Length: 127
Image (cartoon, rainbow, N blue to C red; front, side, top):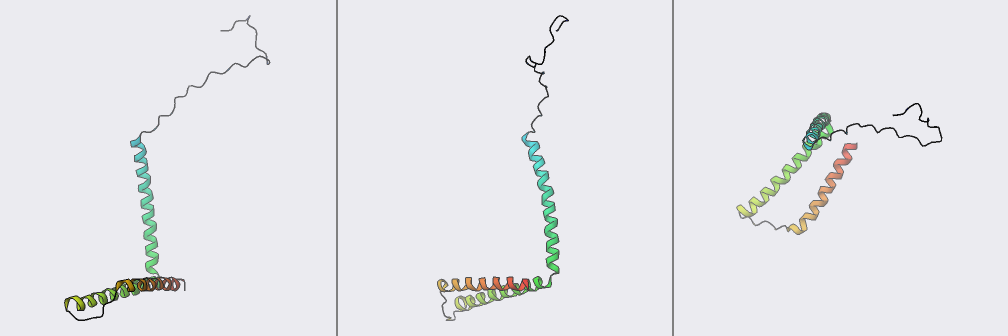
């Protein structure tokens, strides 16, 4: 307490520190609350991503070049599977003497053909 007889501090004296604010620190959310909020954010983002993917799929389905490329690729893949199945059926099951194709010689050629197909399909999409 100051009385009337106490001297008034002047500008040259040391400043008196103001009392510190005693704000209560914010309580940190516990792990369950944080996981719940992250789960809700993930759900919202997942739904948004799903809508974007559906819209992209709808746009692609309307592009006749992509539909034609997909159906051509499906036909070629189906024909390759039928040919391989017929080859093994004739060779193994029916006992026909077909020439043996060594896989160590065939698989690099299949990779080259697959690469050419991918390059060709990429070029037709840009046309």
